[in-house]
Each structure stands twice: as structure tokens, then as C-alpha cells.
Image 1 (cartoon, rainbow, N blue to C red):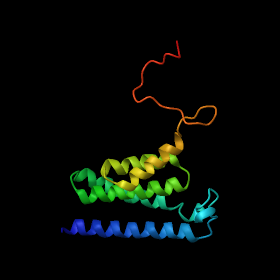
Image 2: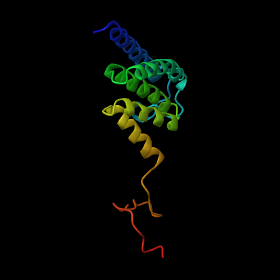
Image 3: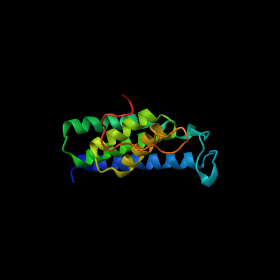
Image 4: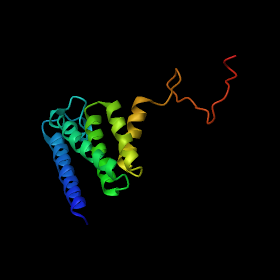
Length: 152
């Protein structure tokens, strides 16, 4: 393993440890929790508010590395994880559009990033709920769009 890769791996480990500590602090430091221990929308998000900004520099650095060597899988995986971590923090703070962008970037660098796929699907469902009829029942969506005979 080259020195460059070893340093990059150490940096990623430090970044992940920092993110996990921030998440743990967020989950235990005075949050208002609802049923089942899930943080409510009024949670104290101040503990995690610095995380996206802290990840900005790391993402910028990794982006530069990826530009230099686009085929470096270690850099691409690290960049995907950094985008995922920042997207997670943004999602927790209610910045869904920014979070979606970061999850999409994570998938751009690592299409197999399962957690980013899950989070992106969660936000998409939240932003675009299933269509409902006036009575509240789900509306069937045609598999293939076509002309609607009701709209003549």
C-alpha cells in the first residue's frame, strides 16, 4: 500500500470516527425524544450542526484527489462516504434538498452505497408522497403513461 493510500485511509478512519462521535453526541445530548427513542423534530440539533461544515473541507480535498486519479477506488469510496455522512447530517437538520444532492453525489462515486440509496428513497417518499384520492385511498398509477380518456 502506498504512503498516499495509507494516509488517505487514516484520514477516512478519523473522519468516520469524528462523524460517529458527533452522531452519538447528537443522540444522547439533550434531545427531545418521542415514542421509541426516535428524536423528534424539536431535537437539539446544535450538536450536529457543525458536522456538514467540517465535512466540506474533506469533500473538497477528496474531490481534488478524485480529479487527479479518477480510477482510485479508495478515494471514490472515501468521497462517497463523506458525501453520505454530510447528507445524513443535513437530512437530520431538515435540509432535504441539500441532503438529496449529497446522497446523489455519494451514489455517483459509489453506485453500490446501500445507505445512500436508502436515505435518498426516504427523502423522495417524504417529498413526493403516494398520490391519494379525496377519500384518502391510494390512487393507481398507470405503468405506462398514455392518453387519459377522461380528459377529452
